[in-house]
Length: 120
Image 1: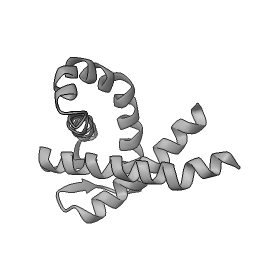
Image 2: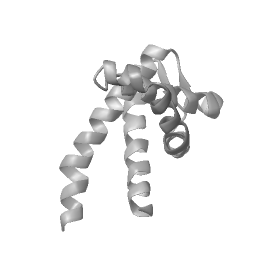
Image 3: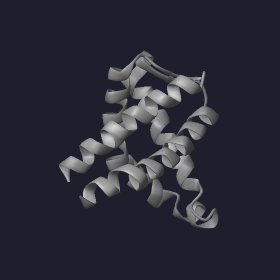
Image 4: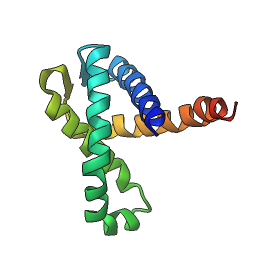
């Protein structure tokens, strides 16, 4: 379990750095900031995200799960708020775009790289 958490932290760190490199309104002060943001994000996903999912369950069901991207954007935005000037997202639209990119990248990385490595 701890190994999976570390892998998730590393993957999210890499994805955050890549997003910051391509989206102008998504700012990180380096890899160390991305690592700290990744740790904070994973803690928020453990504590805050389940509460948000339960509170917004009717909307999530109505949108066939697409509202989960909004919840991911909220947790990402909260992470940026906690980190202060080391991690800044200029608007909620940017947070939503980053959340979608993070979700897609995580699925691709988990499917193509991590799952095959676990089978060996």
